[in-house]
Length: 532
Image (cartoon, rainbow, N blue to C red; front, side):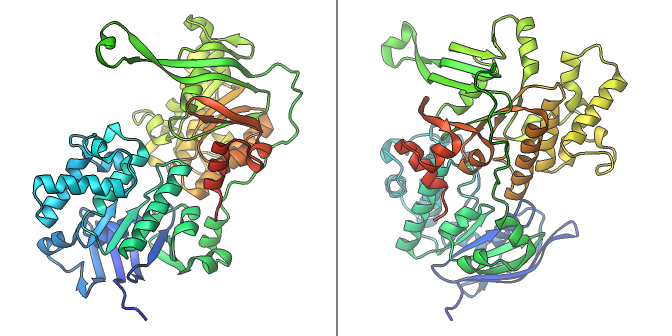
């Protein structure tokens, strides 16, 4: 048996006397990749952060032996010498983890100056080399870029470069691909795999993405409510899970449950677009910018049709034009070409558009940011009725709110005082149900679903998708589904558009496109979403 690089014994973590991690044990051998898996709130991240004592006001007991030293018993000064040099961490969201006031090169160089005593010039040169080693294009130029000037994948690569600056023995990677598109996820995993083989470092991967675990990890430990309920080598655990919670996670892949027989194509479409074009004004470089602005075309020559009871999926990476297409469909962005909702075009007259807005409603990606924290559930869900049915009395409005909430599976029996509660009192999946109720209350014909499950855990994602499928069958709703998740498109859509750089590169019946993709980009998306 190889002596473990990290050996955690009876780790317990509590806040204000309430224990959230309950005496867990795990170990990582040198050069090994261990995945710590579970849903939000299971204790994964707080476990990883506690190893470096980065959790404020946490009462931590037990042992975390690293190279013979107990990390939990070291002084702050001793631990400061280990952080970054022997144990490094990649945080979940690079946009918030990186300092917006400094270039990424300066932030990497700072680590090298503090930990290795390099001069400013030497540190910056090493920072450029580290960016190059992680595959950042034009590393010399990108080293002088600020975080907001980089794409999501480039920011994550910069975070990895910073973490690997001092060649650590152990890398703690907290959801390193959650915020990335499917193809970028594969690139980051391949990069971590290559760097791990080259340096021989061990990796503790924190994630709820089971596909990521299958691709990357050697062993897996499954956490539920602060307990490790199952652990072992990845392949046997996934092939024959013993614990019910592990089985639930593995069975949480979206399932297709939609009416396959499409309505008559000759009927009036709920939404139809022809040669749709959306552009943004941009400043021209140099002297030309003094005399006028240029244009960035975000969507060009888009044709699509959504019939009653149909779902059109729009899939592509960040920057492909998906969200811009959704904004145009909602009448929130001026567009060229033809775009009609139940035979009517968006106009500049607010009264004209008001009738259309009742027909098409939207459910946003992150329910926590899209629901006002100052409004109660009753006010949030009933707000649309104040606009579209102002004559409705308060008691009638309350009945409609209760019915809309019941339709999405939320009642006073389950949640006492439901109508007077606030969004922060609910889980992510429950908040998304409230957002769906808000959209449904005005009885629309079309819902624009902008990444409706990407902010949710896999089991909650499955529940929300099943809810949307049921509502479509019962009400004949149409959906415009914007996503980068190929599995969600496969489960929900009847037809699909594949977008890249503002253009539709492939379209057609969803199973035909995903099972036999013709365009190289579609093939790459499907391959990235396929478990190897």
